Image (cartoon, rainbow, N blue to C red):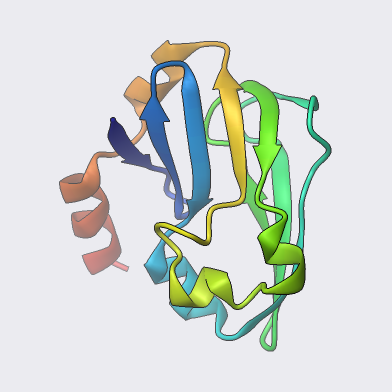
Length: 123
């Protein structure tokens, strides 16, 4: 398994051809207290960069984008009743979707953890 990051602060943890997608702790902290999460339908096809979910916090609403193309195979239904899980565990229990990756080469354009940390340090 390997975790990759986007410049929009999404992460994808890849296991075989399935990627689990969420937002980074950096993004969750910037959003503040998350009060609502809107998830896509299972089976939805997404292109890289498509809106994958919406999060609303006490500060703002923000989109979560698909880091790679694929088909949604699962959503984290627990977030509907407990959206604050994203704040408490953004990089684990606060995941949004699982996606069956259609083009693994798209992962090559994403940052590894060290590159993402450097990116965030520069913001």
